[in-house]
Image 1 (cartoon, helix red, strand yellow):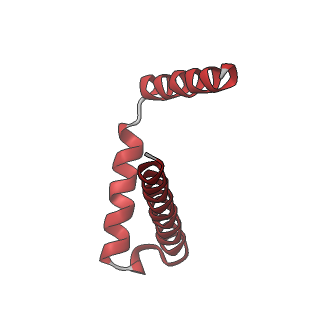
Image 2 (cartoon, helix red, strand yellow; image 1 turned 60 degrees about the vertical axis):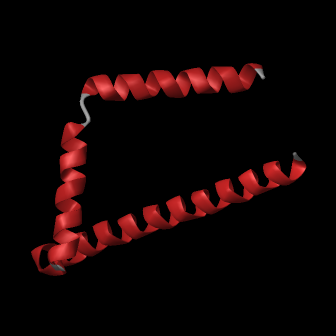
Length: 80
């Protein structure tokens, strides 16, 4: 059982590193778009267009739901 838990822990670590690398890449693309504007290339412009669509899709109701979930997670972890 300990071997399985160690494997799951390693996989979680890998996924966390991949996610972090994705955030860094996205931040780099946004910075590139800010610096170069419309001349930054089709890939950068398409990523920015998708990011703007995602931001437009986030409604106030979604923000409230996320805040509630974060608060519940905080409360559960605090009691444990």
